[in-house]
Image (tube, rainbow, N blue to C red):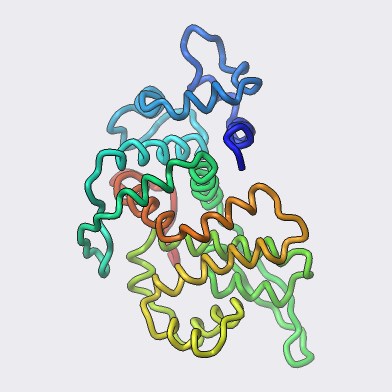
Length: 285
């Protein structure tokens, strides 16, 4: 996805209220920004826009901004912060951090406009989580199963129930939930190691050979979801009848999954799960 297309995608997500917040005070209500996506993108990328819209150090963000705009500005903020950071914390266990000196790789990830858009869209998509029931036949009998977008094991069960044409979307969402959980709730993932049965279900859904399944099932849950998330994005690209620009970005993120996860770790620590924020309910709550 080139920069011009990404700019149009940003414009498509923003509300009229968002545009009023973004537009300079002497340029009207901001409606003109829809017709000038390049100018809109420049405003989003301006480091001063974060403070103008959200307020420096704001903990409540009591503004009439959509979740997408807030997340887009937070991703831009991460780019600004990591530009001068020597290291960022890495999790070695629940609430345990060690410095990791890989900020050049994180800066490289955020340098691409389409990847920044991808992260903002990902976060906004999980402010409302889909769940429900579906019917599947097991041993000749119809059974009802539940699914939730925040439960990768149950979400993977949909692959046995949906038509083939819908499987690319399920694989894409499995990649999304893997990135979201490892990025925003890594402590939950680390402390909630999948049991052998659930890990096996996920690994079989990803079509991995037995030796690789055994190795991944025995390792840390966060490594398991990192591997599976990248693989599910790739499968979504492979089985989709048409590889859209959005899917192409998902394939690119698959190759940089750890960098994407660590950018989200930074945002979660600094903003998303900071005191006073309640954008996301804890998984399993």
